[in-house]
Image (cartoon, rainbow over the protein chains, first blue to last red):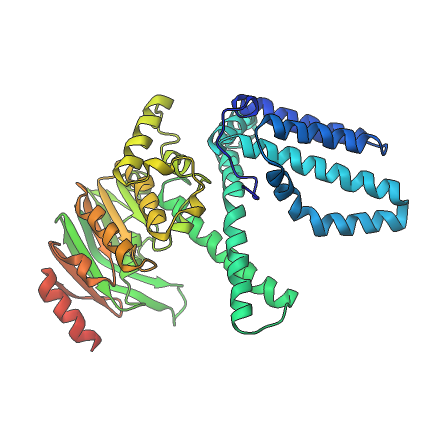
Length: 200
Length: 228
């Protein structure tokens, strides 16, 4: 199972579809989600996305793995809307968030990062006139995807260290070392990119 | 060939700035060069200078006649660098993609890139892991991946900064065997002294100074005496 939105090899139509098309569809889905306003539309959108996962040959466990990180943010957002706008709005907002997360994860689950980077680099080429380096934009995307398991690993390390020292769960005791380790990793990664000539 | 002349490096330019390297003069043209020294002795700083990652505050470092200060880009094309922590140098999520990443911007066709990646993965026992997430590899496999990702670009010199420090003995030996078979000139910074067997020359650094420069047996003995 890939709980992290990382590429799962396969030969499904979703895997074979061009990366640019999938990215464009994801953007269109994001824009279209603005128009999801009625309660009945949420289960329909969810059903469509889950059907796409089935076409991609991805299991239920993968689907659940993608939305799990949304739990706390979804809960907080849902409670806020429940109190301010009522339960229907809360369901619509949280449902749309889940749809968007699943759509984005579906793209990364079925597309090699190299293909995503190539598509982003192609799409960004017109921005060269504004002195934007398309390769650098692609690199940022690749690093973003690569850093998901790294940060999860660092977080697990911090949690293990806390447990080993018998510390109770404390947001500050968790966040500070995680941020420090993440920054150290970013430094080391930057040095490695320089060593590989990627900032020349 | 590597040349360092009058190389000094300080972190910061205030009066109390720590000097991490002082007046290093050395010319290295052997195939296998080891560097040893205590933590903070300046050996990693010196290694980083060979790739232009660190520029000396005084003096000059050149590789194959190219100045690391003025011709850094060309130096980095010739000098591959392996770090201690393989996790910090793996850029792409999957194994094959990471090896292919260094070949971007080199004007190679997709078929050429694929062929080079397959050859590199096969050479380091990673052929069966091409589509695997890099973060799920063992420590030794990650270091081999880092090595493959560097070597696929065909550098003429490989600098390795303590590549076995985070590895167990078996994985360290695996890296040692891989390094032994490389056709490139290799500069290896290490605390695993047994990896230096068969090397041509070993430099010993202490408190920023090059204090010994000899064949491995003599240099390692001096180092051990220094640390006693």
